[in-house]
Length: 221
Image (cartoon, rainbow, N blue to C red):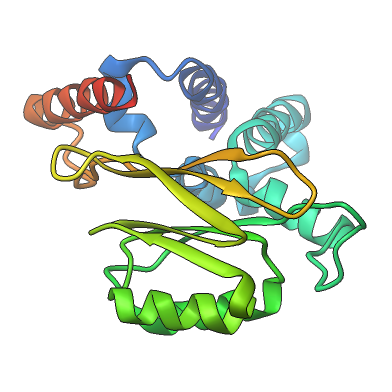
């Protein structure tokens, strides 16, 4: 048990460094959400003993540090408890929402109604007729939208298209003019997805994820 505690403490600290640096050659690890690595630590929690108190504390602190720094869900939970999203916006605030529609599912657009957004960025957009209807429901006569094959912008204000990348890359860029404000540049971007592979013992897995990370970097450029 002592050896396992030492091993997992080292793993937690190494993962913290890897997720902080995120080198391309370790993309096969960082493609996973950071929280999934807690599955390594959870089986040991029931076996923590006073006999190895200092090592148990070190093990616990190492994983807590990893969670605080890299597990996004913990940040979202705390932020949601401290400052939950309200239908009422502060005066002068502009609320932006980004939403992946999961392969063009129209039903997810219903989630937007309760958020009182001013600008909405969509990826994996539903049909244009659904987008037009949503813009009307959200913003009425003040609403506008720019629709592309995969990405869409919907806003409370006049939108002017600036560009799109189809078919080489899915993005939509535009400027929006909101009442009382200068034009604001907008872009919604959907990078090329990759398959999540669990065969980390296979060199091909590491090569595929490394090449994909480099491809994504070229897309961003």
